[in-house]
Image (cartoon, helix red, strand yellow):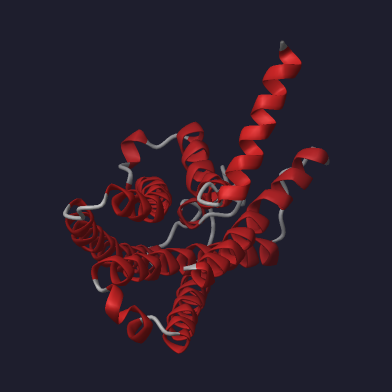
Length: 255
């Protein structure tokens, strides 16, 4: 579990570093400019880290399924070599996914200006600048990506249905609490990441607006990577004790 959390942390760091520093620099310098190559690099990096993170979250759902539903086989199914192979597959799939989308997006002629109504380069915003039929290739790729993501989503849902079925049958209340404390943080992260990103890319054009696009981009590009460390670290007893002590100290100071 902690091996996959390490991978998730690295991907979260990469996702945040892709969009936020450039946006902050533009705010400080009162500009919204980004080079063509910089935009391509941002799209590639963002798709790479987000795709790999989604695949890692899918693998983590399988890890929890094996740990709770097949605990006697955990050492065999989730040994060190198996975990490394799964993580490598997630990173490699994310890299290939990002490479295909970036190459395809920037092969489309852009002839409606160079203004992107977003705080970072995003494929739907780039497609709005195209005035040729070739953008349908990228739309087709996005549809394939959504279908693949939906398959992963179904896998996660089925895993948790079986997990909760087993957990609710546990006679020990302590065992149920331990299982829920291991699964619920992961489920919260997955739900936030999937719901916001799916809505951002699949929302009807009729309800699209710059303000809504900005809010959705922040929700799926910034909030999940920022919340992941907090959500997962709440399982650490030392951290919870330190947080409780800090809150008590603040209450005493206010009194």
